[in-house]
Length: 166
Image 1 (cartoon, rainbow, N blue to C red):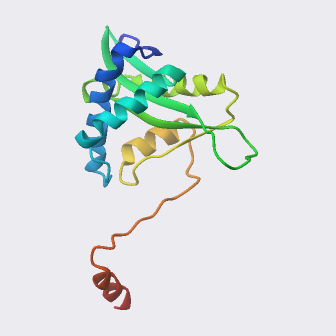
Image 2 (cartoon, rainbow, N blue to C red; image 1 turned 180 degrees about the vertical axis):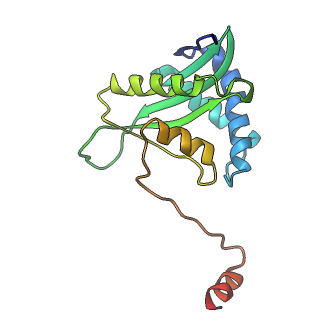
Image 3 (cartoon, helix red, strand yellow; image 1 turned 45 degrees about the horizontal axis):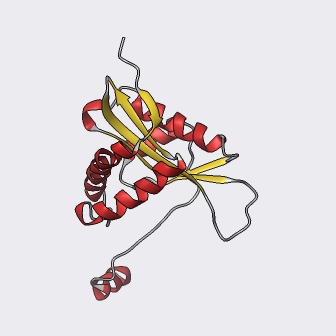
């Protein structure tokens, strides 16, 4: 039987290692079309992760003592009144060596429990359109598409218009 991951709130001592994981996640996302630059954002993500850590929404997975992944979750605090309390799962990452061992599911479950304890009724998240593995994972856990983001490059607008006219 495979060892069970331990999911727990991150400590301050975990922040550098989690930032390393975030940089790896951002690097993977670049291959899927993300515009987020991994290394240039390391300091900014360290600050963001520290905020999540203080609020309790930075969770880490450990397998046999080694950091295997992390998740960040927050209660949405927006400008508009909503008919449901929403939470946001902004990151969920498992190191490649630890994938397919139930760690992602355990992190997701812990993040949802964290949000439920704060009276969240609905959880939102984003996945890259080309990341079929992530989208499949979230669908298996009951998530459905509810908003679609679209983009286009303005680098060569004349080329785009000429394609549309054909």
